[in-house]
Amino acid sequence: MITFFRKVRQHLLIENKFTKYLIYAIGEIILVVIGILIALQINNTNEIKKQRTKEIQFLKNLRADLILEDSELDRYIEIRKSMVNSAQIILEHFNGKPVENIQLFNYHNFNVEIWQAFQRINNTFLELVNSGNLTLISNDSIKNGLLNLDLIYKKILTDRDHLQHDYEQYLYRPFFEYVDLSPLAQSYGYYAANGAFNKDLELSREELDGLLKNNIFKNGFVLSIFTNSIILGDYQKMKDLNQKLMLLIDKEITKG
Image (cartoon, rainbow, N blue to C red; front, side, top):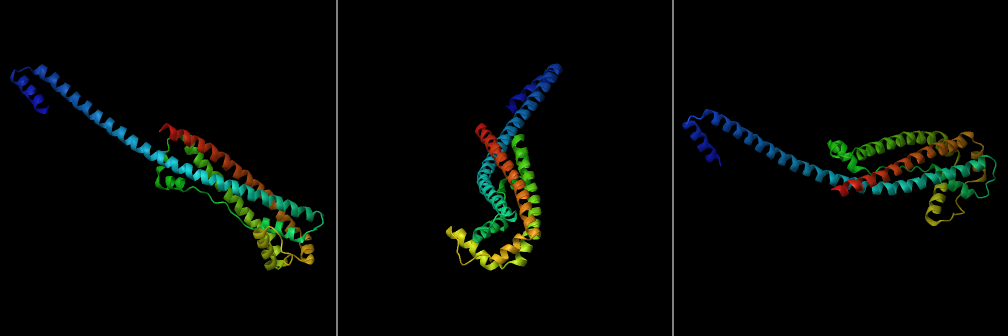
């Protein structure tokens, strides 16, 4: 092809047909430019396909993380609900309800005080952020949803820090100062493992009466209900957003 064009140029020059040669030269330049543009277009198309393939894989990994995280949110929602319920039961005794079962009181007390912390399952999101590949996610709704999930979790961490501080000041300190912890921990562990109480392990009536007169200890349960309820609301927001994101990701993956 190159030889053909060269012969045409030489023929036109020999015949001194400058105008035709100029037109021909311009046409040849145009053909070269068109060829370059086509090559660039093909290259861009291939690159777009590669990027899309990479994006789809990230979306699949994100979905897998969201499924696991959704299950963990269900578990911790139940844990926090149980803690709020136990704190409410304890407060009834502070407000005058007689304690008929000391071991049950002990169980609810420990159920509030034992520290359990939800951790995100977001390895793919962290990989996208840390590698600068978050821009690969072309769907803005998915991208913004992932960022909003992270913001909700950071709020949970802040509230959890406040809750931990409240526990240390209002629950752990008065409880540890007043009560022999060893038999109570054994009692709680026995109940958790067997679904029944070991009657040999319980608070003494003297210890119980002392705790129920401690206003600081009572306030710890009030704060526990308040902050755990806030965290529960944020868990539910995360769960709702997780569900929405999974649907969006499914649609995006289906598009191919």
